Structure formats: C-alpha cells, structure tokens
Length: 353
Image 1 (cartoon, one colour):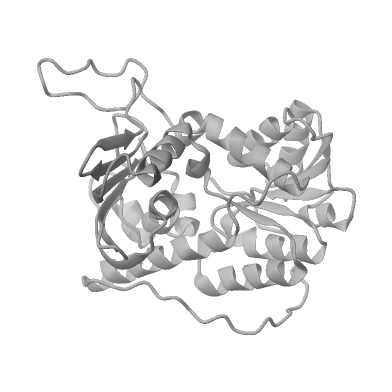
Image 2 (cartoon, one colour):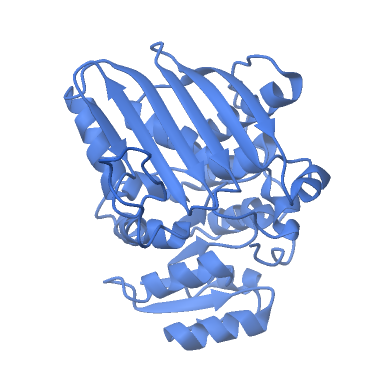
C-alpha cells in the first residue's frame, strides 16, 4: 500500500513516522505547501515527495492521510473523494457545520472511506473503561467528569485558526462521552474565563483559556467537562465514570500531573505527561494501523467521518451557550440533497501548530 501524507507539520511528521513502520505500508508520499518541510520529513522517514499537495491526488497512492491546517481539511476530503481514495483526516472535518456537511456529502456520494482522527477511541484506558461501563460492571452511571488540560497556551497564530478552546479541545471529550456511553447529548450549558499573562492574546482571538461545560445525556446522565490551556503541572486528560456499583478513572497513573494533598497519598509524579503526542502515542499508532486495515478491507471503519459532525454540533451548542449564558440544545440539521461543487483550489494552506 502507498499512502500520501498531506501536511508535514508536527502531527503530520508523527503520523508519517508511524506509518513508515506499519505492516502493509510499502511507500509514503509526503506533500506540504512548504516543500522544504515535506522534503525534510521525507528524508527522515524514507519517503518521496509530491511537488504540491494537490499532486498527491493525481495518482500513485492508494490512500491519503490528511494532517494539513484545519482550514484545508474540507477541500482535501473532497479531493480524496473525487479521486476515489480512502482518507484518514485529523479532526475536525471542518470548523463549521456547512463545511463539515459538504465534505461528508462528497465522501458519501463517492462511496469512499473517511476515518476521522479521534484517537481517544484507541487508547487502552478509554477502551477498558468503555468495556466496563457497557458490561454493567459500574451499574447505573450517574455522573461523568472529564478533564482536558494543556500545560501552556499555543502560539497566537494557532489560536486565530483553531476554532477556539471548545471546538479544538473539548470536542475530544464530547466524542469520547458519546463513544463511551452510546448516548447523545440533549442539552449543554457552558461558561468560559480568561486571565493571566496571555489574557489579551485569547481575547484578541475571541477565545477563552478555560472552559467548563455541563452536558445532559438522553438518559439523564450528567457530565461535567472542563478544559484549560494553562495547566502548569503538565498535560492532563482524565475521564471519571461514576456508577452505583463502581467508579473507574481513565488517565490516572504514575504520570498524572497532580499532587495529592493527603498525608498518605501518592507522591507527585516524577515525569508528568508533557503533551498529547507523548500521552497518546500508542493510541495514534493503533488508530493508523486500524486505518490501514480498513483500507485493505480487513476491518470496518472504526471512526466514520460523520462522528465528527455529532461532536461539532455539541461544540457549536456550547459556544452559543457560552456567548448567551443559557442552556442550549444541540441542533441536528436536515440533510439536503447532494449538490456537486466545482473542483477545489490548487492546495491547502500551510499546516498549523
């Protein structure tokens, strides 16, 4: 199998290195609008380069992995669909609902595989917790708590194109809650706050550095989801599932960046998690291996692109709630008939942070 990787930034470089070692992948083709960056990555992983991102879709590959800037995702998904190529795309499909629907319609019309990059579905802890919940071991789950905390704010140029803390970070929690429980979110109430040394940067981007959300699921389960860009202790992703019989915690280990205040508690972590690539390295490998197997017809698509629409609708409702300070029910837009659009432009924007 020959796979094209479009986007040679941080996540693209990581995925290319993983794919180079996945059984069944014979060759990689790297493309980026900054050709020197594509060439440097290709040299590191033993791949060749395409002269431009759009050239990847002109033949010579069997599938594509999209790791370019978020703003380029919809056009690249459309290109893959029209070329008849299976595609793996890092989340999100698009930053808004119309762009997401457009890309999904094209993939559906072409009948091509589109897998979305929600890597928590492939994390060992999340999978064990899902099995425990669905087996009934926890009993009735009455409360779920999720935490997503970055150790430091990203560069200002990333904030402007990220879609904001809720769409960029908490969307992972929204997807994980749906995947863990098999339930849908029926109502949200969200709040945001900004402070500290980077407050002006976040305000300029129309964003917040910390957010808290209350979700109500369709069976009445309550979920609290918090996120921040300013967790100086380290990178922290946890999910607590509290039931009438037992309570399980994902992300609680010797590297969890938290210090117990109890005299008999565990010591502070010697090496707290520093970032998502380190924390979820095995999950990313499992995710990409699953994509290769799906392309080869050995397994079903483990995370269809439409899952991204569900999570985005929750995020959009949260943004409305945050702005208007009220509970909001997520929308489910009607599916209009497919309208084919002109071929997308010559290439994506440069890969983001």
